[in-house]
Image 1: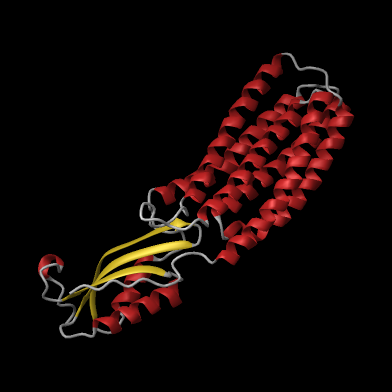
Image 2: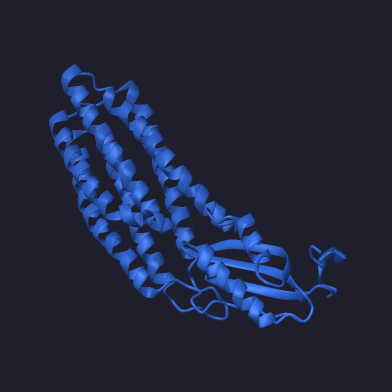
Length: 308
């Protein structure tokens, strides 16, 4: 006999999505305005480092816009063709954001190496003023996104974008100061290369985490052996096998498992207790548990009589 159980609260509440969208909207507005300022300042001052930072901000704007679209799409109702709804699109958006950062780093790096042989004239004063404005805006946006970075992979991606921008602005300020004090224009492409490596570093972890979710790896921070032990400790459960846990999207973990139970056991009580353990101890609200009596043919290898 088999029985499946699902938690009623299988998804994330709509108010949580609303709370996550609000800081992204504010951050998007600030970053969009600053990107235009840095873009104009880069052309007027002739600074590649400033243009590189503006280019990075363009990916920030795209990343936040894609994240907001992902939030909207994930709130769409599920259908017979998409039984989990559109939640996984958030992970896809985070993955695309990471790849976009790598692409912009490649373009900036190429232009920086080209400028090393013939650096153009740069207005260091204008460059410094705009970089200072950019740093202030990045600090403000980073503070807005800071709280939500651990709850959602998309917001974490946006936060990493902004963090890299902040370091980029510091680099631009340093380059402008060095150009002003030493007179060497080489500091501009040198700092641009540094910004490239910073972009690659900040996006590497994001791509890795998104790819891990795509490959249905075990959710980060979930103690799988601990889950197995907790289920075996449920009264009348003798063995746990075919245990699988994966992430649908940020904060939405799913789990399935087969529970081997003693003959004559109240299966509904076992399922109720097991589901309660998963929810209270591990925060798993979407589980599918299948029961098997110890002598059923589906019991693997015939060794499910349990200890004693």
